[in-house]
Amino acid sequence: MRLLNEFGRAVALVTLSASVAMLAQAAPAQAAAAGTVISATARPDGWRAAPNGSVLEYWTTTSNGTPVPASGAMFVPAGTPPAGGWPVMAYDHGTSGLGMGCGGQSDPRRHPYQDIRGKEDQLIKRLVDKGFAVIAPDYLGLGRFDTGPHPYLELRTEATATIDMLRAARSTHPELSRTWSVIGASQGGQAALGTGHLQSTYAPELDFRGTIAIDPESDVEKVLPLLGPGIPVIANTDGAMSFFVSILAGLRAARPDADVDQYLTPLGKTVLDEVGTRCLDGIIDRVKGLSVGDLLARPLSDERIRTALDTYLTVPTSGYDAPILLLLNVTDTVVPSPLHAALAAQFAANGVDFRTVTGTGKHTQLNDQMLSAIDAFLTRIQATP
Image (cartoon, rainbow, N blue to C red):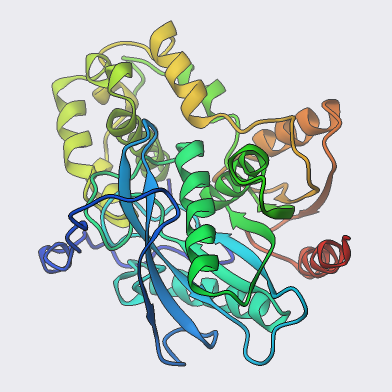
């Protein structure tokens, strides 16, 4: 699904090249506990927009608990840290594909969309300038290690990749506080909400302060069961098709028990095989002109795959222990705005501590009111005892 946003627009159609694949890091010979550092490498100022950048490689786990290496970027403010250390903001990036190098955080030269990378850097610099250290995970499979297709929109591993990177960062940089928060847009907004929900049980030793989610993906698991064979090609839906095949490819990689292949036509299996190494633009190119009906041999209303999709995708709508700022564009057509409204309504019904600020821009576009709300939220969470 094409994610046109304030952080940028997908540009030239390219696939993840063979030369990039050759740069894949070999996984360390011996696995270690999640959150353990593999390496920390300082990068010179000017590497990205924020100063004091570095690349972290660390251990995290797959959805079934298997240790895997992952990577990300970190930025620390200049100067003397405040008492207790620099507060940390985790930045969860939006949809970028399924293949190695597509995350673009630990190696921005390999970011498939340079305009998006530039907007990401601007946001990261804004946060660093406000006194936050920033960690930015690539997510599983999208960084410096070839660990198979990224489990796209798998909420738990997005969250654990984020929290495990935070632990790794704090172990190498003692000037980082135990106080932290998370921000993300689109896929990253979903990941941020998942992180904000999981942290209370996964990292209770840390002091979590809040979540900022910009046009987050949500409630897609309620739509997918409506799909099945016979759905024709609909004009201008290549972006939506890329979103659809990415979910199925990620589910197939992460949840073998769901037996995704039994729901696919031979063409569907071929497409999922091919997109697993591609970035978003290459995925869009591969599905051009295809329909859901071309790929599905059985409807997704079957209970087995519905249950798998629910556990894989669903954003929790209760059980948060820190405030949430939802920034939502009512004109969003990428994550359709009715899904945003449904998420906000569920939060309200369940008594979640959240505030919504709306805009009328494109997907994840931030207006002045939204930027002011971010600044006010940062001030609020920094002041929290």
